[in-house]
Image (cartoon, rainbow, N blue to C red):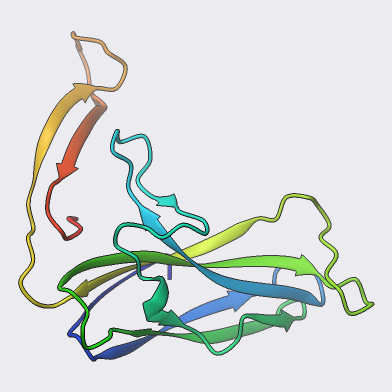
Amino acid sequence: PGRSELELAPGESAVVEVSLTNRISSDRIFRLEVEDITGSSDGSSAVSLTGEARGPYSIRDYISYPEESLTLNLGERARLPVTISVPLDAEPGGYYGSVLVSTIQDDGQGGDAPRSPIIARVGSLFFLTVSGESKTEGKTLEVSTINDSWWYEIGPIKLGVLYENTGSMHVN
């Protein structure tokens, strides 16, 4: 899935199935990793990956999966169980991250040889709500037209909305 939203109590676990299909070539190694995500303060991007750094609402320690890499031949599909486990002492609120999948071609000599110096990754976003007392609030800071025109004779009119989340939970 592109996005999974879960609500769990401290001490609970859930499993989300992530599907991988090799549509590239034979003998591809797929690697999985977890990164936290954040939003941007200026609205320039909806989601930003944090890399090795921990995000302010880190889900990194809550996510696990059985294998960090697997090999699929062309046309093969794998369904990987991703387990989200909330510790008993977890604070109520929102936790956010992504399970990322990258692919590298096997060089046939036991090592990994990327075909290109750029390794593309695709991710599945996880939005976890830990139940308990939390704050959901925010405000609209700005509504403006996208192309800065102030007069329109016909529509549609493209609008930009800048919303600030001031709570401890994500808002749809």
